Amino acid sequence: MNNTVDFENVTIDGLESSSIAESLAGLRANEARYFKNKYNHDFITIPADESQDIINYVNNILKKERDTEIEAKPLETSSFQVENLKFDYVAGTIRGSYFVIKGEY
Image (cartoon, rainbow, N blue to C red; front, side):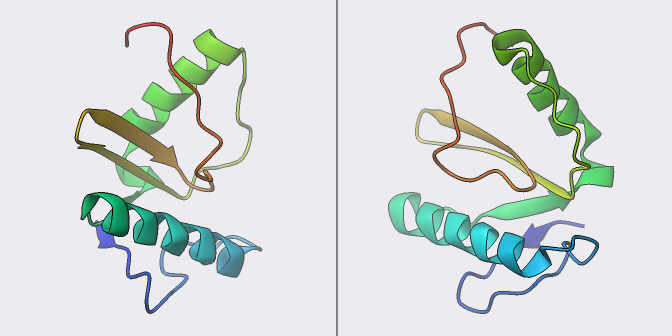
């Protein structure tokens, strides 16, 4: 079930299993606010168990580009394009921890 993130009424919906659910909810709300203000785009999340394709895509890129593997279990994902930029999120990603992808995937 998709969740349009409300950055004015922050909830922990979808993040309840995390010991830092409130912090993650705040980060998620900040991302939602950023995309709404900058691109007029609603930030929509998908439960990780319903979006394994996005997780696999991100994991593949991280492994090939940065030789990095994330051990934490994802809670949510989001994938969208605004203007000419494609964004893929796996729960807990903080804006600013991005990198330019060198290859084509």
